[in-house]
Length: 533
Ligand code: ADP
Ligand code: MG
Ligand code: ZN
Image (cartoon, rainbow, N blue to C red; front, side, top):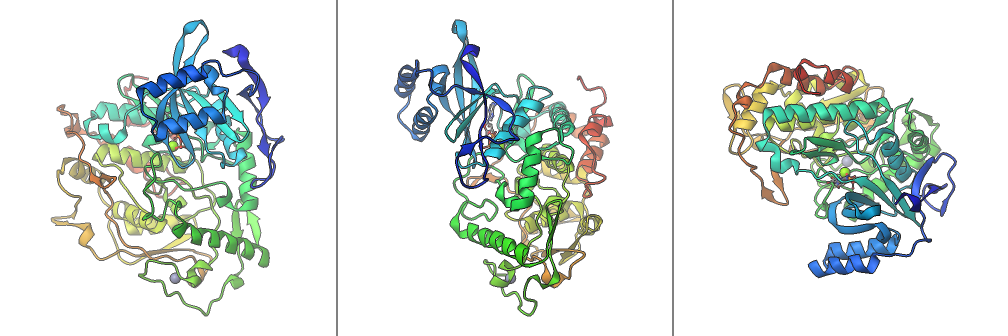
């Protein structure tokens, strides 16, 4: 196989939007299979085998298309089927035919051709530099033909988080979290902020006790990142506005066709419209006003928008023109709503590796409570309100103040005791109720909670404003099905979850990113004492 590998420089378009692929000065070397020299030897053969076993379904058609788009794949791989599909890629299981008749399972990630080339190259660079060690997925090869890029990774068979959630032993949960922190420690060391930490991006093979953090498609660099291309992304995002390189994902980002109702997923024209308007308006404003760009933050002057007009979209399912014309603060905002840290939700511009630790905390919350997804929100304010129901409204407001954000909240919600919350949820067999003290209050019957966020330095009138309806913090459903996963294991471990677990959870779900526990410190937390390393 190796002799067929030729070293090339991956080419990227110089202009982020238009133009053809050309040399990009900042792009480092990756391995790319030579595109045209090797005729597809096993092509017909392998595809015939495939077609015999299955009718030509959507997946078969996709595989056909992939073979056509990147013909050199057929030399080396027999693609068996699709194992993942997201907004930005399709992932296939394939058998690599190694010299001497050996075979190996690999995952082929086919990135959609419209992905930004620097984005693609940065994803590959993260895998090459940080991957292959400490539970971070590595990369074997990359192929490119025209604008089709395929990343070849070792295949790790993995479980569906939802399927196993309620059958995991406490010891397994501890191992899971430990291994997640190991991966996060490694990428954070390289100055990579993953930005999309969630179960479907942390592969888990329960039987083999193997783990792999995947998907650097939304990664960002810290100011001192060791990943050169993340620096390029940083600077391009500052010039173009963050939306130029980032898109949001859904909580089930891997299969995601049915999303018209959700404002977070940005797939439908109906909801995309305001975003486009928003970006256009923002660019226009950036030109008109004397804006200073620092760290991706556009500071606007007070005369940015009309102050005499009032919003009339309150309580309606649309955003009025006044609200549309409001200039939004520019800050990186990507990832999956239910896993977003408060500083991401409130668009604090200086986001750090701490946002991944928050997401890890949300995973831990799911593991301890047996509920997934824990938060399912369609927009940032709803997500923030949901965080408040667990961490307290006063505490959230207080923390937001430390990074210059002011949150208005329609009522005061007390913080919950994490142990009580998790034990109640884990033990409950019926719908989601949160008790406050003696009585059980079904939150869905509560009056809606409303919140607004504005920058402390600005008058409230001139800030981005949305209105929200409270949603149940936990919806245990997928594709309209209410999911009740298998019963908890028979062992008694769950009856004596140590205080250390909840102490670590509390430190992960620290509303203030400056004091939130780091991956390095999490590994040293007493919760992990005596763990087999
Ligand atoms: P996307 O950017 O579209 O989310 P991911 O890199 O997260 O793409 O991959 C999507 C899904 O494909 C993952 O959630 C996982 O189920 C599967 N997958 C990705 N890489 C591998 C791999 N190396 N081994 C096994 N499955 C993988
Ligand atoms: Mg993913
Ligand atoms: Zn309005």
